[in-house]
Image 1: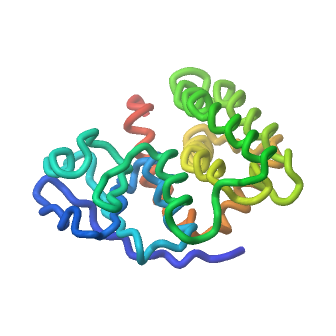
Image 2 (image 1 turned 60 degrees about the vertical axis):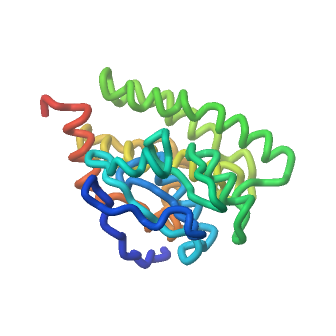
Length: 236
């Protein structure tokens, strides 16, 4: 199993932090270390090998600087990408933008069957995420089983690799931050393994954890579980 070299993470900028020299020609990816949506763009940046070309700028969302909304991104959320004198947002759009506008391994397939299946999987994302978070308010294991059964059934369509489209792609990036979180949360809080009875999901998790571009973005498991305890299970 490949071992990721953990890159140093700059401290998040807060309300008292000065802004970087915005629109000085530097390409910047604004993220939050805790945000699964921002994690998507971060993984794409790493996978393309753009660590030296796209500067990572973490923001503390609980104490975010006013200048971020005023000078960088009026939507005041992450991720956003400062590139060529403009700022773009929305995590899925940023994955495809980074893939199309920077060198490095391709994340979006050109093969028509794979493109069509990718669009189908991406269109299901909101449903998948909603099912997972709703499950925390109901019967967690039963509620999330629909989401993970869909995931299991979607794997294996292509036989050239263990990922959704065979090879690692933007679809895996879109899903992995949420699988990461719920895999840990379900194991810790509910003593349930989401891969039980789902062998393709088990292999997918094993293989994605061999990709440094992803593992370099992972949260500390204890920190993640603590966040979910406080946010979704205040009684525990």
